[in-house]
Length: 95
Image 1 (cartoon, helix red, strand yellow):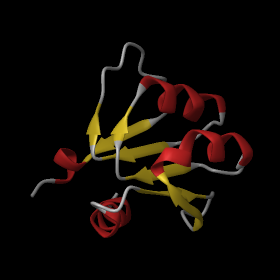
Image 2 (spheres, rainbow, N blue to C red):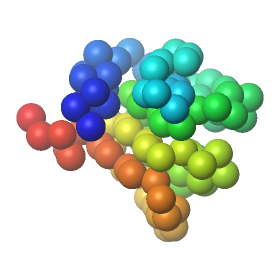
Image 3 (cartoon, rainbow, N blue to C red):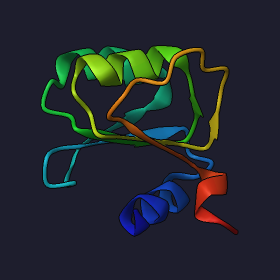
């Protein structure tokens, strides 16, 4: 969790997303506007840390890909939280 907090701080204000593999190693860094399309091609992604709002669409894709963690700046309107995915926002990490 500390690693995710540090990554979120590093990319804060940059509009960037980091895709992580099984070992929590950064496998790609892309603009947030390209996150959804990139996730569709990066099937090995197991976690994502991004400077943006966590949406239902992102969570649905994460569930389809068997991701374990999604970290963003804040939570959007979520109607269905997928089981098995940890969701963290900036406020979860404290000041």
